[in-house]
Image (cartoon, rainbow over all chains, first blue to last red; front, side, top):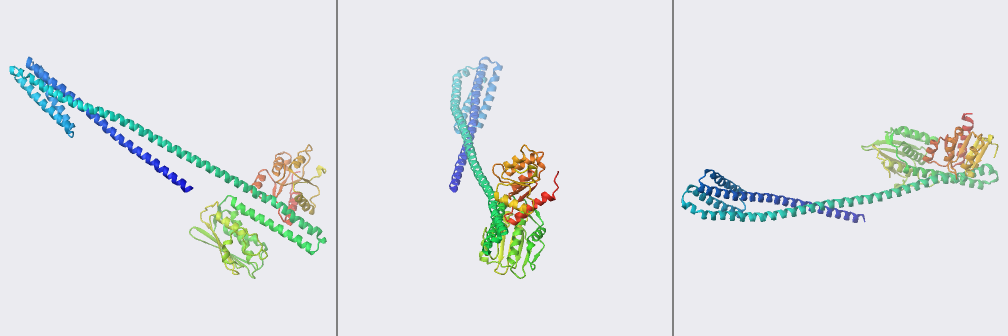
Length: 444
Length: 141
């Protein structure tokens, strides 16, 4: 299901990204086309202007030359000369600007040739203005002028057509650009909306899960609270009344009756310890870790003094120098209490029970160990050692609830460390636990 | 009700068995002569805050979890009262929960004792409380 959802998400991303890229590329191409169309429009406008000017100047040239021929007024030579010069300049400009466009170039060259003819004709008109023959050539002059006008207007017409085309292309490109831009904007808004709603949905789901977890946690709290309070009260009555029965009515009981009262008390006692151990176990899982620098040596000596009150006279305990560690002191104390009690308990049947406590450091962690010369256990059951209610010895051999090592394992795990053991039957056991140099509280 | 001025220890406990065991433990050490047992918080509040303001036991042994008005509520009322707040109140409960301990201390509890399951330990604990508060401790007159 998750994989399916992920595939859908990836497909969605690929599709939207391709849409965005193609829209972007299209907008870019469109923009380039728009730019080149606008350049062409200005180029065409340029051509049209120069053609217009050329025609006007040719007309000035003609008027100047004819006027001079008629009036011999030198002032009229000025427009002729300016026309002759400037038409040249305009034509040169047009030729330079259309070098690559062969059709246009040919037409311009034709206009240039006609203008040259016109100039020569006008020059001869000015020179021989007095002669009749010159005047009679006016008809020819008109023809040349007509040719020029036709050539120019024809080119003007063609360029005007092209100008219209370019302008309509430009407005089309502008419209396309607008459409691409709006689509880009729309797609982006759509993606943002989809992502936003997905995030919202996910967040809602997460907070629902958190609510459920909090509810479950609350129920667990209520459960352990109830175990703590309500289960102990009847046990106290069972134990108390059995003892009162023995103490105050003992003389009315025979040996069998007293034994039964004794058994009831022992069991009530045992169940009380079981409840306490389970509460400790649950407490270790729920409480927050408060790590600090722990003087492990002092702590172990402290626990030894507390646990060792009922020690046998032959018991020897050797404690090496123990390096300090970062840990939650109350939890680590609980772990040591269990490990030390175990070592004393399981070696208690030896003639000379011995316990060794030591430590060594590696680059990343400190490993503490506790060894005894007690009954040990078969390594094939080592996997059961740290489970809750798992015991490797019978109740009548060694008493216990089967919670101690599970508690140790849980405490060490919460500090980010490991716990393990080595043993052989009747040759003692060694328990190791490691604590990392830097505390890495593990909430599992 | 007994003569109210004579009440030295007020035991507020809803569990009749626990109450009997507590009284037995105190009696063993002759500490239960002027003891009054009330069965819930409401009775305790009525006793302490009745029209007779002279009900001033020397010690209150209070259970935490009780029907109607619980131990916390009784404690809150006692410690909020200008006169009664000086009465030592000892919580005698089955609960080892940290939040209960913290809450009662915030309200000004004088001691918090978890009732042991084993009877001899229970007797020991209760008689220690009795000795300490009734004999060893010097209370304001």
